[in-house]
Image (cartoon, rainbow, N blue to C red; front, top):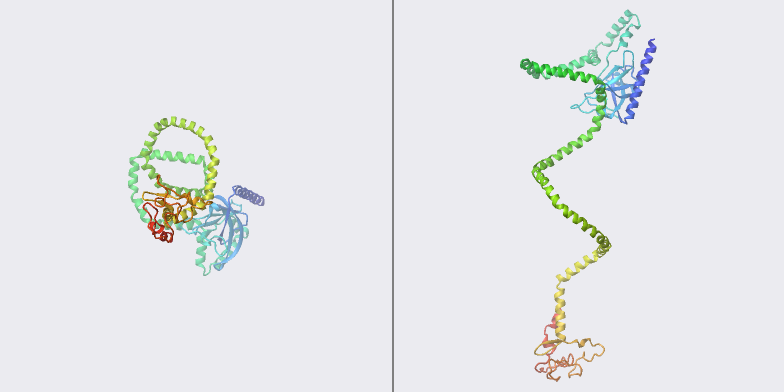
Amino acid sequence: MRRLAVLAAVLVAGVAAFVALRAMRAQGSSTSSFAVVFDDARGLIPGQLVKIAGAQAGQITNVSVIKQGGAFRARIVGTVGTQFMPFHTNATCTIKPQGLIAENFVECDPGGPPAPVLRPQHGQPPTVPVKNTTEPVSLLDLFNIFNVPTRERVSMLIDELGIGTAARGQDFNAILYRANPALALARQVIGILARQKAQLASILDATNTIAQQAAAHTGAAQQFIDRAAALSATTAAHRGALELAIRRLPGLLAAAQPSLAQLDVVAREGTPLLLQLHAAVPWLQRVASDLGPFVAAAKPGLAKLSAALARAIPAIRQVTPLVAALRAYTKRSLPKTKLSGRLFTSLQDSGFLENFLGIIYYVDASLARYDSNSHLLDISLLDIQNGKCSVYASKPVAGCGANYGSAPASASTAIGSNRGSTRGTASSTTTPAPGASKPLSQAFPNLMDYLLK
């Protein structure tokens, strides 16, 4: 019957572990490895459960024996969901039984700040040291005492205890300290109370004042107690939902951590904006009050704008190809336009326009016929085929004369029958008659100098 009970308990624990692992896989949570060093494995094997805060967090993957500090110890490697990581240097682990005769599991507390985070070392995952682990005495250990006759067992225990503890009092004290969680917790509580002695003294001194205030408000105190009792009853009625929420809380916190970080950034960066909005509230209220009349006045204009857009859309569609062509032409002509701009700027800086106009002026002046009254441009230069009026002559040539008024075309009054008839040859030194043309060298003494610049 005892074997059947043990087998049934093992099957129940295995089914629970399988269901827990399937639930963890269904949630799609990733896992992380960690290790714990115990004085004794207490029958732990791979596949058994790892719990954190009473919730199933993972399973044991490996159990090995290591030599540490001159003694052999059990090294337990397990995996838990990443929401339970990281483990800190104040993390603690203990071995607990599932029931009176059921298999054991590992219960861990990951610890927390301000203690630093445990880091992997020498290729091993973060490891909880043996000083932070405990192994409570199980009921099976007590039953095993009676497997042999009591007298022989007691004698063996005394002998082995004397041999095992000889000259190792400090090690024995350390084992007792880790083997009894109550002693370790009591020592922690005593240390906390010693550090907070001044605060405790202040609390004790204020007890009389608190009692006096409570006595003066007995009705309010009774009402508070009644409401606390109702709250406790409501909480007890929903303990199943609360337990489920506590189990899901680590995953929720892990999923919400990135969003909370972003929310913190938004809160910091949004504070100046909120201050500006607060300062702009009066103006916003004014705009909101003026928006109604503005909308009422804008409705007729919007209606006419709709009609205008309806008429303008066909024109816009017709103009679109022209705009596209202009855009393409502008894009193609842009390099040449830039080059032309540089050319015009260079010509302007070098005085091209003024010099060019000067050349035109002096050329026109050199070709013009003039008398005492005015000048006349000689357009006979365009007579290329005839050419008789384009050569120098010392006498008037028929058909090449040009006169102002009705004066006869004589040698003394003619402005010139051709380019050189009234001006003479280049070697002529005669003085021209009144009203006749002057020699080119006398009319424009600086022309050749200008042209040769």
